Image (cartoon, rainbow, N blue to C red):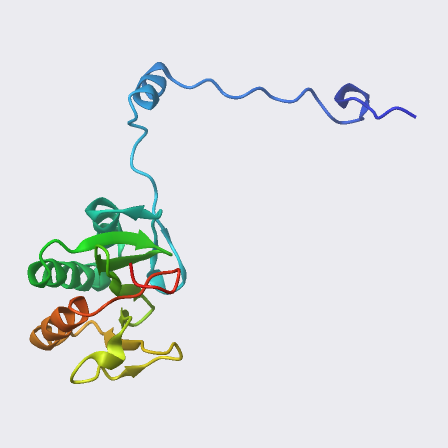
Amino acid sequence: MASAAWRDIPGKSKPKTRPQTSKRHAAAKRAGRTGPAKVVLLAGGNPQIAMGDGDVPVQAFIKAAPGWKGEIARRLDASIARNVPGVRKAVKWNSPFYGIEGQGWFLSFHCYANFVRVAFFRGTSLRPLPLGESKVKGNRYLDVYEEGFDEAQFERWVRQAAAIPGWSPSGAAR
């Protein structure tokens, strides 16, 4: 028995065609201006940002971070840029990453419900040791709450972390 076509199924009507777009919308789409994309917030309020290299995706992450977390992210980014001239930036796995070209990544951060977690990838080499322990060998965390953080200590850690070989997904610093 042959499969039934849409016209042979009781209660089914001809499929609708795609709606026509307005001339203005079509012109904007051709020009690449379809309006701002809606940012999706993942669990804990972490923005879902497409992976990309450079400052542009990092700034998109910062702009999309909700409320006080966006201000903390802006301060972290500014502090890192101020203390590590020529820092390499990217967004990977919905988090900003910071590194040195040829040496790997030294730091990342991620938004959670009640704090922003800074991950130092070779954090056990930093002095004094950041308080947050990790199950990942060598990593240490700094959890930043709405009240803020010790920026002077953070900057010392950033300078130390940038001076040692970092982490890369392949397992070797690059």
